Length: 209
Image (cartoon, helix red, strand yellow):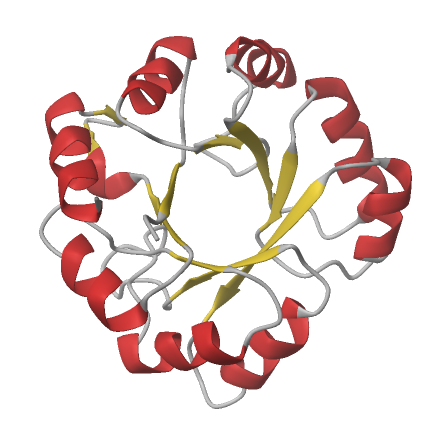
């Protein structure tokens, strides 16, 4: 089955439609990460512009359910990506307050306990998004996880799994062949000077197809 592709850190409707035209099925809109956040009104405008069949994903680092619910209602997205597990509230609160919303839980596969933690979180989410730890030289950038370990997560998780972190047109095909995830999530690997690069996007989609 062809993998689902999520293009993250979309900045405006032009980038959203560039990604959609190349086959992206999920659009990531960053809400509250310093240096990357979009205003809620911009997220709402981009989400409203996307056609049926394309899932708009609110990416948030909040660990409290209440502000996530408020922001999701304000922006009208179809899914929420939690960069960290909730510590104030529970995913069930999100589902109850936001009927039909999808929950994507991000998990970093790094350290001895991360595999078990990923499996536990997979029972609470509609999808997992797994990456490695941060790069040593760039604390904002996530690396690809150990691909063999990522494959184990795909095999044992209770929900579909997206592979993320460090993906580029050069390594997408290999990562897919080894891990066999439900989908790929990419942002920095297809960007130039902070914006979506159409040439890199095209190459990535060809490799992932």
